[in-house]
Image (cartoon, one colour):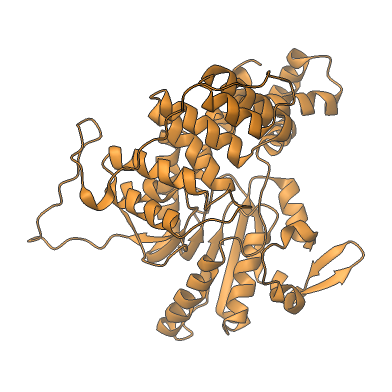
Length: 409
């Protein structure tokens, strides 16, 4: 598939093709070729260049939302506690302002509203803006009727409190829906939300992992502009290292993934020594790198087929047939879409080959889909430690130490 579609998507939304894999983009293009009845890729290229709506359709075919209500539940508990504290400080002077972007099909901003209402905040005590680039997602969020896949986990008591069951699915009740204002927008658009007051709390989770480094830093700057100086930013579990590098500090709330701006250091305080990534970092006993697992001696491996399974990929990798294992991963992703274990194997194969940058990106993709994937946490921790990001390595090691369920693996 031509690189022109990768370049187009990078220009539209800052997408780094490596973050989702070329096979995912290829599949999205093929879907749009079929949907429009184009003769071939060249004919589709002419259409997508001339149509803003088709560009949007291609974006939506590539960026498939994976979300559910109260994803990362600890973050909503943390939000409720922080919001109660901020509300007391405001003493009714104004409502709390909260931003969720990208909001996908609405599960996150509606979870925010439910969490705050259940925490006892009055309905007029907060306002939520929810933004997404996808018109299709926003239409679904506005409809606010959800299937069972949007409800995961053991505690679904919120569904009884805030939803009504209908023949079409579970419909969110009006008092929650009215707390959320849905907005169409691109995080990379100049002057995004320039007319809005800054927000007390910003949710932007599992987005930056799709961007290249320059775009990540540009987006981080936008997010800091959108939040108050004393505001808090909720991010995804694979994005903590980036925000540590751009002057933000994690609050010590386990599994909440919430950051604030670092307080200015007193003039008399010595500046910390931060190792440059271009120099050899000194080892630190507090965050010793986790050794990268090397492939064992070759064993019998299966023949490579078009429908290679994850188990067969593991056998190929462990047999030392790295190129075949990598190709099998790409085929698996093309057939099944983004899959945590396939991304993990690509990370491990890159790690063993000495391509640490690629390995880090693949481990982050794994953690986006499976936030407590123990092996990805351990290996990403090792890579961060080797780069000198000892605080990020320690956080990942602590998460890895909490254990992981068989389903999440």
